[in-house]
Image (cartoon, rainbow, N blue to C red; front, side, top):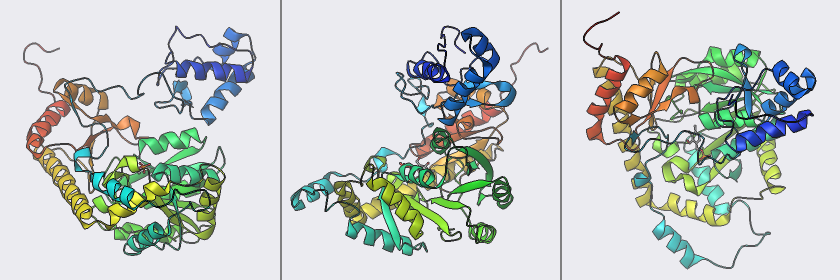
Length: 446
Ligand SMILES: Cc1ncc(COP(=O)(O)O)c(C=O)c1O
C-alpha cells in the first residue's frame, strides 16, 4: 500500500468511503495492498469486525480483491473514475502499440455519407411514445441472426454488448452469486463481474471454446450464469466449434437454474461459422454487438433470447435509460443495408485474418506456439509475462499482459494484430522470439 495514504474513519461506511476516495484521487493505485484487517482496526481504534465489513463492502462493489495470503488489494481497474486519465498505464511514446484490443479505426466504415443520408431523410423529431426498438432494425437483425441459426423471436437493443450483459446479470443474479466466465477472458467482463459483486468461476478455454469439463465443474460449483464468446474470443481468438457446441448443448440441456449468455461480438469479422448454443437452456440470451465490425462508437448491440429473459432486460431498461436512440438505430440499419459497407467489413475481416495468421506462422517459424483462430488478437503462452513484456518494450513493442485477462490460467501475452502492417510481422516475430528466449550475455557467468 502507498504508505502516504492514511485510511480514516470509525465506521465501516466511513472506512470504505475513505479507501474509495483514495482510489479516486489516485493516492491508492491499482495493485496497492491494503493493510491486514487487524492492523487497520488497531490503527483506527475500531473492532476487526468493522474493518472487515469495510473491506467486504469494497469487495462486493469490485473496488478491491482479497486473495488469501496476498491480502486485500485495489483491483486492476476498479469501477470508480480516477483522476488518472486511464488506469491502464499509458504506452510510452515511440512504442508500436499492440496492447489495446481494438479494431483498426482505418478499417471501420466511414459514417459521413450515411449520416448525411439520415439528415436528408429525417422526419419529425421522435418523442417518447414513438421511441424504442425500431421495427425495421428488429426485422433486419432477425434476418441476419436467422441466417446464422439463432432463433430471434424476442429481441431488444442495448448500448453495446457489455451493457446487454450487465442488464442480463443484473436481472437474473444477486451479489455473491457465481458466474462462469472464460479463463482467460475479456478483461472488461471480469471487471464488470467484480463491480456487480458477483463471484467469477474460471472456465478454461482451448481453440474450440470453453472446455466441457470446465463448464461442468462450474455448474457443479453453483454457477448461476455462463458467458461464452462465440467467436474471436478475447484474448485467445477461440471460436466455438460444431463439435464443442454439440457437447456443450448436451451438457446444458434443460438446466433451468442457469442463465446462458453468448457474446458474438465479432460476427461479420469472424470468418469462421457460428455454432450457437442459443436455446440450449430455458433461460438464454445471445448478444451481437456492432462495435468491432462497424465501430465501437455506435454503442449498439442486438440482444435476443427467451421471452422472460428479453422482457426482463427490456423492462429494466424502460424504467432506466429507456432505449437506444433511434438515431443510432437508423444509422446502424443504413450501414447494414449498404453493400459497400459490407464490402469494407469483409475487407477488414480479410486483413485481420492475414495479419493474425501471418504472425502465428512467423512465430511458429521461431518455434513458438501462439493461438488465434479468429478475430484481432494472438495469444502467446510464455513462462514469465513481466520479463517478456519488458524485453519487448525495450525492443519497441507494447503488448498486453495476460494477467489482465486471467483468473487462474497460466501466463501469456495478448498481441492485438488489428493495426499491424504485414511488413512488420517478421520483425515483431523476431523480437518476440528474442524476448522469450534471451540470448545469454557473453562473458563471465555465475
Ligand atoms: C469479448 C468481447 N465482447 C464484446 C466486445 C464489444 O463490447 P461493446 O459492444 O460493449 O463495445 C468486445 C470488445 O472488445 C469484446 O472483446
